[in-house]
Length: 180
Image (spheres, rainbow, N blue to C red):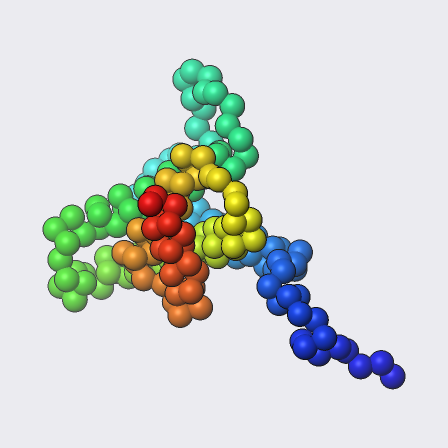
């Protein structure tokens, strides 16, 4: 019977991205995005909006926009969703009151929206830190750099779980080295 080689026999294998790791990340990202759409759709349905299904469908632009790369389109779509959720949170607590002073249902709505944002931000932290770590010479365009800086700011604002603290530190280091 053959035994599996241990980690000492496989140097660097832990540090190479695998298809399984990438698929897990994409699944987490998909789940976070679906959660965000669910939160947005639920809010529109609860408010009596007859066009609630339109959240999942892209809005038609009045004038044709220049073609975006798939990554640019993804970033713009996610920035828009994040902006929309942040606006909803602001609308639920416009005076920035302490959560204990808010009605329980409103506090719970804010908690759910923040949880969804944390999931998206955590996935993005993981994605961008892995992308930069495995392609250290890659230069990102202005849209990508702006998105990475925004993810860092959102992470600082919302906080991250312990498993993503290293990713956040890595991106902070990258951002400070990128701009000096």
